Image 1 (tube, rainbow, N blue to C red):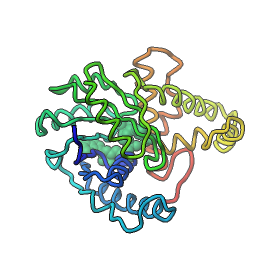
Image 2: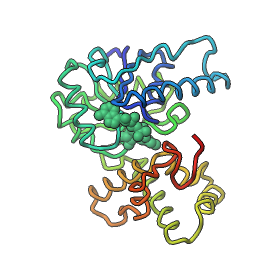
Image 3: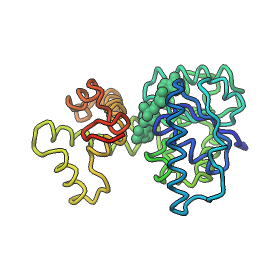
Image 4: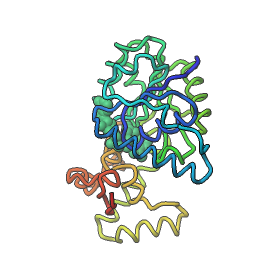
Amino acid sequence: MSIQIIGVIGAGQMGQGIAQVMACAGYQVQLVDSSADALDKAVIRIRQSIEKLTGKGLLEANNDYLAAIQCSTELSSLTSANLVIEAATESEKVKTTIFQALASICPASTLFASNTSSLSITRLAASIPNPERMIGMHFMNPVPLMQLVEVIEGLQTDKSTTMTVMEVAKRAGKISIPVKDRAGFVLNRILLPMINEAVFVLEERNATEEQIDQIMMLGAAHPIGPLALADLIGLDTCLSIMDVLYTQFGDSKYRAAPLLRQMVDAGRLGKKVGQGFYHYER
Ligand code: NAI
């Protein structure tokens, strides 16, 4: 199916990036967030990111990419979207509520994708009519720079839905790899236990934050240490993924580090709030 208008729900760090790459790929983008403040901040960050990429010669200087993005706090602005990519908070309840509301206002032909890090696409799809149009499009953070999109087919996803979203990802300059609908998919099933282990090491005071990150960068050639990466992802998102892995696989190796949970309880969610394992100037 031909995609011209893409709805993006959630204007946080992921939604901003998704809206940006889709606008830069030539799609009309309708960006929705329940918070007007989040939308205002998103527009500022997208402008800054586009300027940076233009400065590096990665985007055309005379193209007003931002003009392709319309913002709204209302889901009803998405009725004419051909594809809606949801990147709201990582909570099954939040996402199910959004998709049910969308299903009641969008035609049955509108494709729905979730950027969830760990939730079951099959379960999200089961909550709406026409589940064959639901799929996972798992972008990486920061979206404008990271090439991968994991494409997750739920049990009822139609092949045509998969082909269409892979085409969209390609046009946005991404490489998509289809994976099965298992908790954490592939990337986070491998990545998050490593981050969680780093938090256990910190909790045991075996090493400081900086030492842990340096060890993984110098010793394992990681471009960023696990604690800095946790701050970038968002500690609430990390915790939510660990809880899903633990619940779905029932294996104690996936239990979240108590310090990770405490950090979330304390509101130290990482870079997006200015404080996580490290402090960030905002
Ligand atoms: P975030 O906390 O930066 O942004 C979430 C946004 O969703 C907020 O602006 C919030 O106002 C909005 N929101 C919440 N409920 C809403 C609703 N009912 N309607 C409209 N907007 C709503 O979170 P982030 O990091 O952007 O994550 C979003 C999604 O992307 C999550 O599912 C997360 O698991 C996934 N993800 C996150 C990655 C990361 O590195 N942070 C990487 C890949 C996927």
